[in-house]
Image (cartoon, rainbow, N blue to C red; front, side, top):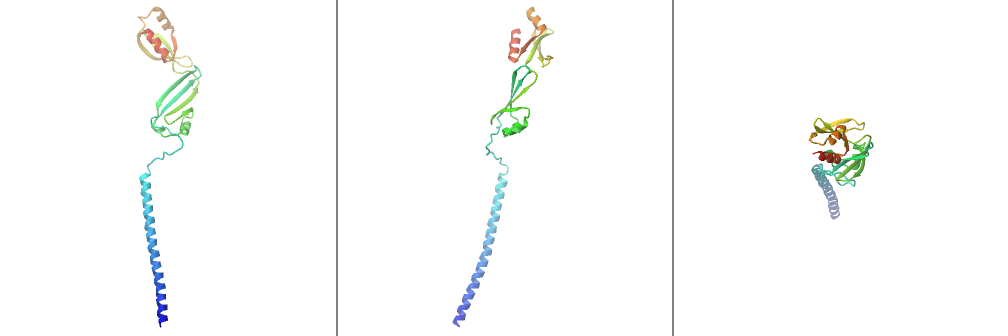
Length: 192
């Protein structure tokens, strides 16, 4: 009888141990499930919070909002170089060199940095800095010349020819050709 009680206690202990193991297993699964759900929620919150952040860790240099774009054009007809410097457009900010190579297909990217993009091209014809200064009524007028020698009126100055020596008036009637803004300004200042 003692043996049967002992065997019954052992058997009851085994069944009790199995039941406790099963209950603990289900509780651990629920705890793990809750932990996993909480981690997923935290990850989603992190993604939502940081989804509008722009990645800047790149090995390629990119243009800054303060960058300048320099257009350098070499005119084959007159061998002059024209440089135009502009502030960068907002759509060109934070772009790499490949972007500019593809955007400006007619230009060569000569120099690229975060604060400056230098573009170069050569072009047939002459630049628009070739002038013919002539008499126009009683005033001095400035004409631009194109590559075919055609004149286009650019400006009529307020400089009167009536007070100039006859020799200068004769020159102005034929036309005085000048190249560049500096040469033009010097000539006009001589007549003022």
